[in-house]
Length: 152
Image (tube, rainbow, N blue to C red; front, side):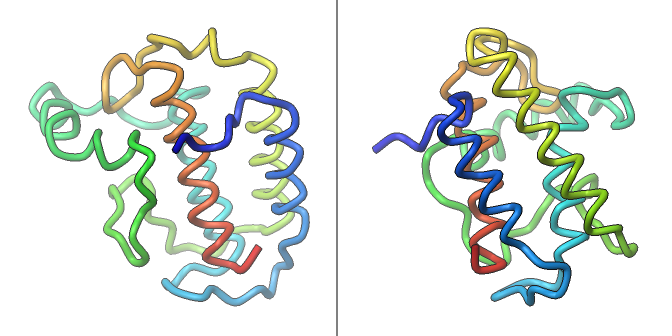
């Protein structure tokens, strides 16, 4: 069973509708983040693609990521609740809900506009070259996991 294609307008619009249904005071069904922190957490993946604010892992760490974490992140298998996350994705400081929501929606639109062919065999910061299916799984699964976390 394949995951919905985050590169299509239909899936992006459905995801944006879910994001727009969030409220700043939604309570997580699991975990410790509030909605602003969760949105900022989701933005990290896109920051790693579109900005240079996150450090590239050293060759040893990249090997570890590729050998032990890549399959969990890019497969179709859903994340488990309360899974460990990489340090770059840990958001403890307060975040502005509306600002993070707007950023995430813009990242989604940019990703969809660039399309799956842009991403096919593109280099991921942590995992090396990924297929368009792996990029899709990584993008969609992460968002779906956290939107479900907040009941939307």
